[in-house]
Each structure stands twice: as C-alpha cells, then as structure tokens.
Image (cartoon, rainbow over all chains, first blue to last red; front, side):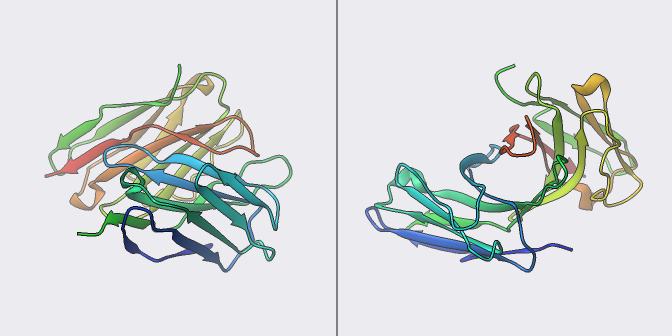
Length: 114
Length: 113
C-alpha cells in the first residue's frame, strides 16, 4: 500500500531558527497537505498543495509540491515557541471526481531546545 | 455547525465491552473520514463516507469495527468486544469536495482497561 516517509521524526528548535522537514512517497499524489497537531487536539491544516512544482507560503511557513509528485517539504522560518507541536504531511490521490482518503506520514515532533 | 464535533472526548471501557463513538460533521460536508492515532504514531485511515456512495471500509482493522453515517450527516464508529490494542485517539474529519483539505475534530481518546 501507499506509505509516506516523513523526516526527521523529531527535532529541537531554538527561537529564531529556520526549520525544514520533508515527506517522500513511493506513489504519486494529486494533493499534498501539511497539518499541525497540538496536544489534545485534532490536526489543523496549514498548507495545501494541488499542483506539481507548486510553492506556497502561509506566513512563516513555506511548502512545495515536488515535481515528481512523490515528495513535499515544509519550511518554517524564524521559529517561535508556539511552533512546537507535531507536524504531519499527508498525500491524497483522487480520481474521476471521487475523493480518495488521505495517507499520513508519522509526523515530525518539534520541541524547544532545553 | 462551526466545526467537527466528536463525543465523548474521553472514554474508558473494560475489555470486551462495546463502544460507540460519535462524529457530528460540518453542515454540508459530503465527505467524512475516521482515523485512528495510537500514541506517538501517525494517523491510520479507517473508513471513508462520500455522499450516497458505498463507504470505503478498506482501513478497518477487523470485523469488530463498523461505522455508519445516517442521513449524510452524523456518523458513529462502533467497536465491539474491545481489546487493549484498540486504545487510541479516534479522529473524525469532514471535507467539502475532492480538492479540499479536511477539517478534523478534537478526537475521542479511548482507553481499554
């Protein structure tokens, strides 16, 4: 079945640092999505990408849909303490007007450097 | 409603008992999904409803799991004869159409003791 490899699994950030994470897949997707999940909450959509090569920003967040349609990355610039949480990538393959389910990566946990 | 509502938010049950989890999606969202999230893990797809089409049940882990969506709105996920490995957060998500991201509820944390 389709699988997403998300890396890194975890990372520590210091305020002001830039952060980068990525996802790769053995299969192609029509859509790539990036979510953030805070403790006790459901994931919240950050950025949606619908076209190969697309580069989209949302404030300090920038994400790209890989040309091969098998990968995506998310960058966070000038990180702040509230950026901590778990970030998930998700790929969706839909066809013929029918919406396929989202396949999720295992997440990247962002924590503050002690 | 303004968002996807799930109830209960927490459920503790004894092994072998049946449980029913509820999802009340955003009005008008034709697609509804159930995911399971085990501790420290990503989201595992369970089942997907799209309008009046037959649901995609390919993610259900066993025949103890079933789900219904009545009237294209509220959905219930039922787990029969619960086992300890069923302990997880069960998340529901809804979406308007194919080309749009999902909105998730806050989940139901199920603990089987």
